[in-house]
Length: 76
Image 1 (cartoon, helix red, strand yellow):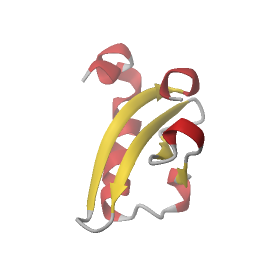
Image 2 (cartoon, one colour):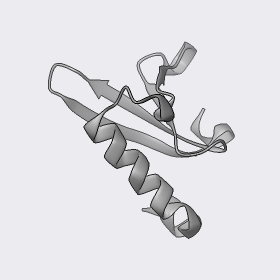
Image 3 (cartoon, one colour):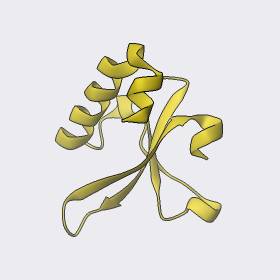
């Protein structure tokens, strides 16, 4: 994944975020929230204070599809 190649120091935080998202998408530390505007069909979770993951939640299929990973400027 390009994000991990560019930010190898964040690999552990990124993997922890994905594991927590899989187990409990509502966990407060993820800071999950729906986006607005042109990204209104997506949600966002935090890796840390600088980096986010945008994702699509498919509740009917119990699936989470990652869309983008990066800093605030590149994700939104």
